[in-house]
Each structure stands twice: as structure tokens, then as C-alpha cells.
Length: 334
Image (cartoon, rainbow, N blue to C red; front, side):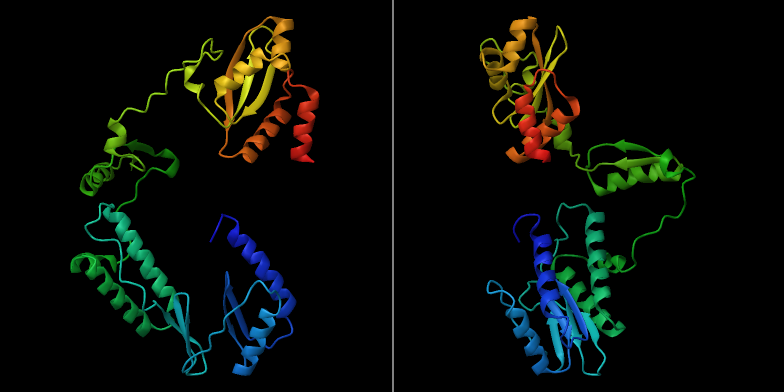
């Protein structure tokens, strides 16, 4: 939970705890997924010793211990049974979890539903060590599908696995061309595919992220720039924010590279009207006009400054003051 590095940080944190506390303990098998730990040891007393050792590493983290009941314990999505002395595994679904699945009447394409169902079957199969427990879990999953509107014939077909192509195209993967058109229905999509397949044409139908609505709607028109004496000739970029930009003198071709969190035309006007700006000083000496272009964009200030530093380091713009460039580069690459 949290931001994108939470999983990595938790693994680093847990790795440090494990290296400090577990190397001298009597553990036959140790497996961990984030902070869920499954381990085998010799007795309940030894298990509680390991539990105390883990909890004694840091006051900010406390593990709970769950011991097997009648030599059976469940965690995550599997159950381990030790009745025979050898661990056997079966698929586990929490009782509190509701039997909810993608409804059959959903507008999601049929092939997408089939893929999700087959992925769930593969997950069940991978958790079961015997054919008997696997079949029981498959039956329970089939009942869940029926409760979500799936016909018996549809469920039966998904047991057959992915359908193999009856004929192979003579074309190699590099010879294919792609036909893109709006997704209207599964039946139309398959009919178009079959036309190319029957005639052995190296064409693949592509409709990802394309809908009839997106194809018919016109893209939003950028607002007109009302800034008096705007220095940007391309009004489409006037209102862009959080960007790295370049200002190029049309007379000597010298460039300035900077970044702004505000709208670009406001920042460009400041360069051309402020006597402290190196762009203003260059224009006073050279007499040229400046063209403005966007080189990169970012979602946050840190990424924006990093991209600006990279581009300055790569392009070495002549108009940028050396002191400002050095400070930015040292801040980023030191």
C-alpha cells in the first residue's frame, strides 16, 4: 500500500530483519510474500521462539502468529495440510470473500472474459498438489461463474484451454501489417479476422483503445491566446505548463533552455521584458527575434528540473548564464 516504491522498501526492510534474526534458528522451510511468512519448524515452542525473535527486532513492527489447526493452515490463496507428514497444498478462498466475478452481460469483450477465466483456472491449478483438490476448486469456481450469469456451454468451452489456430500463415511476424478500426462488437471483430485468415493475408486487426466515440469526436480545440503582444507564434503551446522549453534566436541561432511551472507564454514574455534575463540581454545585442518550442514535459517539479538539467547538459545552450547552468547541473549530477 502507498506509493510505487512501497513494495521495494518493505522487501529491503524485511530482508534486513531476516538476516539479523533468523540465521541461527531451527527453520526447515521459510517463504515470504511481502510481510506474510510461511515457515516450517519442529514444534509449537520453536515457532513461538521464532515469533518473539522477529518481534524483538523493531518496536515499530509487530507480527502476529497463526498456528495450524488439526495440522492445517491457510494463508494468501493456498492451504497447507500436514496430516500425512508431507505437506499437501490446495486452493484457498476466504469465506468472507463474496462470489463476485465479471458478469456475463458486461460490455467487456468476450475474449477478455475468457482470458481472465483461464488465468484464474491456472492460478487454482498452480496451488493444488492433487487432482482431487484441483477438481473441487474448479467446481467451486464454475458455481461462481454461474452465479454471475455465465451459461453452462460457455463455462464448458473455457475448460478446453486457448483455441489453437488451424492453419499457420506463411508470413513471418515482420511481414504483418495492422488494420486499425473502432471496436463495435466481438462478432464483427472475429468476422474481419477470419476474412484475412481464410485468404492467408498477412494482416492483423488492431482495435486497442479505439472506440467509435473516440473516432467520431473531434479533439478539444486549445483556447485562443488573449495575451497582448504574445511572443509565441504557435498558439497551441501558449497554455502548456510544467515543461522544458527552448528559445532560439532567428538571427544567430543561439538558444536558451529553461523550465516553467506556469503557462509558457507568460514565462516567455518575462524573458523578453526583464532586463535581468539573459534572453533580454542577448536580444539587445543581437537584435533577433525568438522562436519558442517545447522540449519536454513533466508531472512534478522534481522531474521537470531533472529533465531540464539533462537537456542543458546535452545541448549546452549558448545564451544560458554559466553560473545558473552550473548550479543546476551540480544539483542534479553531483
